[in-house]
Length: 405
Image 1 (cartoon, one colour):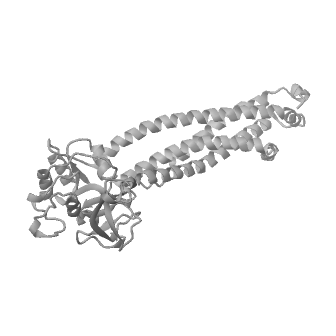
Image 2 (image 1 turned 90 degrees about the vertical axis):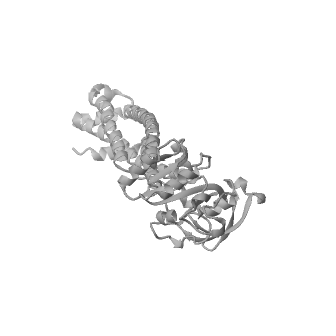
Image 3 (image 1 turned 60 degrees about the horizontal axis):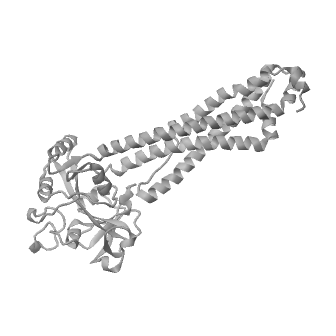
């Protein structure tokens, strides 16, 4: 006997209750899927964000603070790397280039970064999305998401944030946008990049070149006119050079690290949070499934006499068992599948919020972990579904036929 017509009849007969049960399973599944998807997307996005920064040399202190300041462009203060160490880094022949980073200004809330053409070219993989690199002190390159257009002029503000845009905080120099970086998937997409010499000049610091040299752009710098910097981005020649440079600049006067080292620590924190959130989500899913089974048991008690009539007409107990089991599994499977889409949608919404707050572009997706979670919920439902099916299977026929329902 084919149980599917009866299962469809049961689904149609109590469609509102069945829809409510599906929604409960969908929400429980979606919560777990969103947690897993968002964590993986955040890891992938943060890894992409630091991919172009091979080695960072900074003053001794918290490498997490340096990473957040230099790579994720978060407002904050860090100790400056002393000029003599800056000279040593610039003189390293094992580096393809070493680019100083300088901060302190903003444009309409977007961070201004002072650096060299080498780093701009490196971030662009040798080819800008629009325009060209800066060629004098009054030109700028902007990130992909910056509202500034090619050819537009602007002045920088001292400090960070839109609340610090009063007229007396404007620097006098005017810049012209001449290029735009390709998308980085990081806060650098909203960065405004200007020559490091100009940002030093705006803050009354040595510009890295002798005054009589004029507006010289980029290296080689004059060692006598270098100043301290928050950090330096170093592009080593090869892997061996990277480890060698890291060891050389791990001294009392400086620290050197791979950004991936910082991410590993952050991932451990994310992992601990994920374990907690996953445990909470799993508990919620188990409770929801149990509630669904309880509702089904009550519903089947209402239809007790109908199943007794089927058995009286010759339907075997195994047929009734199969009908009930398939009915419950269909409800749970429908909710789990819908939960995959709900979780992905929720992860996308969370990703948009994270991107708006941090500038890190997230691309959530449904992978093996999320599918495994949904499959686990279905498998659990298959086991739990035995309870109501077994209750009807064991029901005495004479008592069921005498029931008023």
